[in-house]
Length: 513
Image 1 (cartoon, rainbow, N blue to C red):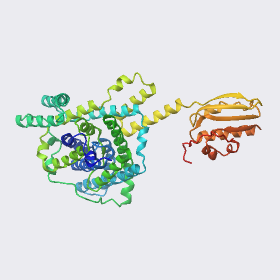
Image 2 (cartoon, helix red, strand yellow):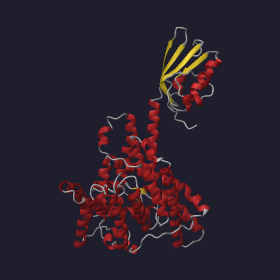
Image 3 (cartoon, helix red, strand yellow):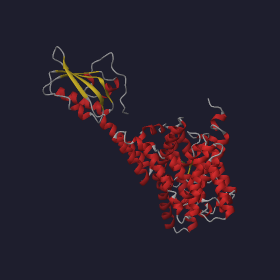
Image 4 (tube, rainbow, N blue to C red):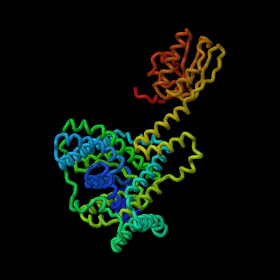
């Protein structure tokens, strides 16, 4: 059993604290940007980064994983905001009341999305992330790396030489400093050095304060509040579809982030525990005026590459963020945006699975197709669609490759014909199974032997039932050997013709009947 220190702290408390401070600063522009996407005040996204980040850091399935407001969730929230705005404006409410009402609907969405995620974890459905094949995972990572990089381009509008110089300087610091010393994260050094440089030289460049004046939020902390539409049936019906989508998008992105960090750390996290933590965090966000969110792969990789492998790093990031917002907004306002862009560019470079380029020529064409497809869909659509597409394509390819069941035939001394089957019998191989028989020319006595075959689903069981019926209709005797007791129980017509064998298999058919 882990002691408290091992549970809370990674390889080093110092690394966790320093890495957490880097992440805290990096969270600010992301939270602000995603709030703008969702059409709400920046404080709604900042509160989400604090609340969700703190809860998942303490009880999540992977130490060091960072959660907060994300683009994937914010894009879904746009639908909530637009629908709520239309509804509220139709009631003739003033602009302030409309803005307040939109937040009420968004917090209601957070509550219901969180409850769904808790249910997913409680029923141990997080394990289904294992169904995501490796090419789909690499495609997701590559696509996300491109999205992370391209999402920074909006900050480069009107950028001058100074901004580009700071970006390159930040990237150089993060690349070369770890080769000299790992005692302090390169991102933190870049933030301190270039912020001081810009402040004392008076160089003109875009600052965080230019995105949103955080001074107006100074001293503000999240407070408990119950959405005014929490028990409004019409409101619940309105947000329910969005809550379902957000819960699934959040779970998929969080569990894929967990898988990526598992590869980095070599230690396996708990998918179900992460689902529950995400759910509890989002429900809490809903009661403290924050938008829902999920795991953030960019910030999580910043944390890991900066040495933050323990839960303390996530706690410091969340607490550091809210302290910065509540007490040090003037400092946040003067941080050059270029530093944060440079950090995210380095995250993008580190996220991309560069080895997939060399593997793609060696892997099966179907896997290469999945990798490229998931990458493309992640870039042009969204994560959930990309991953689901990758799983479906991989499943269809697998089914096609294994849709083969063969039979060797021989005759016993009394003329009985034996069909010895080999291969899996399931929905994809039923056609091949049916093609093995020659009912018209077969002798009066036939035996079907499934010793080297396995019946995988109800389609396979029904295929045996159907072929048995055909032999009976042809007035021929049939016996079936080596079927599991479960197969015999499911079958209607054929079970009475099953012969008992000492080595009948004990497997279960993968069908919930």
